[in-house]
Length: 143
View 1 (cartoon, rainbow, N blue to C red):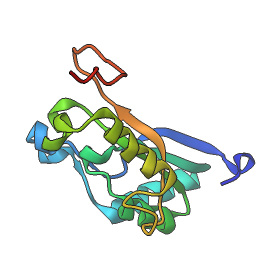
View 2: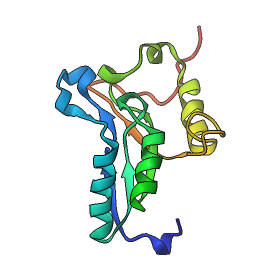
View 3: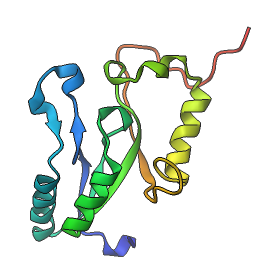
View 4: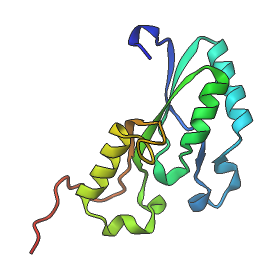
């Protein structure tokens, strides 16, 4: 999408997501593809052209669903990479070096989500959630 073609933008949305694993509330699940298309069409009809879906990997991001919703509505939808907050992290994340997590996110930005054959790249770092912890952006020295 060319910058001059961008109209109204929704800069932080969750077209598909699932907070229910932690909230235990099924009202916190957005997984209805037809409803997503309907809502994106309403946005398009109001002059919208671009939705930034900030749903990270651990909140039920659905790249295929985003593609279908975008194609069905005529609204451009960009996807995010990253992870949300500790309660939502997959079990393996704490044992994974920061450099490997960074490589995974960079790969999704440059090569596409699920690799180059999937055909849809993430367009932004959607979430880097922190909770009452000291944030360190370097690997500790190996001893």
